[in-house]
Length: 163
Figure (cartoon, one colour):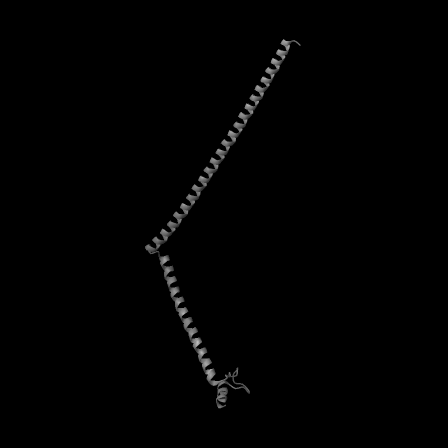
């Protein structure tokens, strides 16, 4: 091989290496651009998904706020109607109110009677205990009425007093 052929071969090899490096650099640049495009698309998709989630949350909040305000309005309307019925002298409302008040009075009087009866009962029990202590032991009259060989309460009491 001559000198010129060697130089030409080296130049051809250098040109080939340069072309290979250029092709490799171009492929790397294309891959980087492709990766960047994929990353940009993923970021854009995430932004769209986040916006959709935010919009849904805002819509849900609007619905919940509307439901709460509707409930508050219904409660206020019911309270206003009850107040208006009371002011207007609704006969059913007045009748029920009168009956309720009468029943409250009846319950109060029955409670007072019960308390008085309990107090009387306790007083009678205390009197029985006091008299039992004075007499000593207590005996009870025989159960049953007058019959053959049985005493009635009066006969038994006379016998007890005679002892």
